[in-house]
Image 1 (cartoon, rainbow, N blue to C red):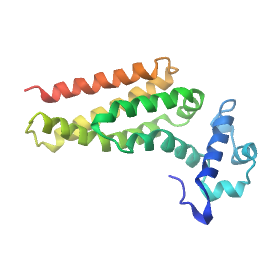
Image 2: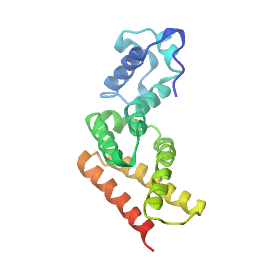
Image 3: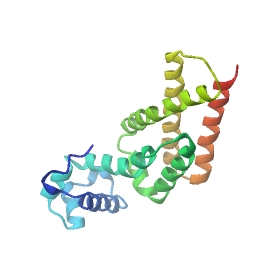
Length: 191
């Protein structure tokens, strides 16, 4: 995650740097871009960049966190899970080129990162389904395995969607995730 806002650095400046990186990645691969390219494109100095971020990778992480992770986890509830997924798919679809290029950098690391965050929010979902259906399985190993299965599965589906060119609409992808989660709910509630 990015450095703390030291020396009075502002969120608006971070957004400006993020916008610059996204613009540049429309025509250039991430690997070929430098911090100087990013700052020159938005009219900032290199030192300003380093007040906010350690390197361009941290800026990329910040963008993914701000655009996808933070909106997903803010006020996350079982009631709004599909709306949250739709919003993430919609954001990625609107920024298609950026997310496709971002995923080329390190798919394995991104998958672990997304899975870890998903796990934190899927585990309570699994417990809730069990509680709603009076399932008295207190086996922590079983809870963990089901939560890991869903977490890795969801992150895998998202990554494959991006790699296939995001051809399916956000609506189709959200419905697919809903079907998977519904299927797991059925498995959990079978006696």
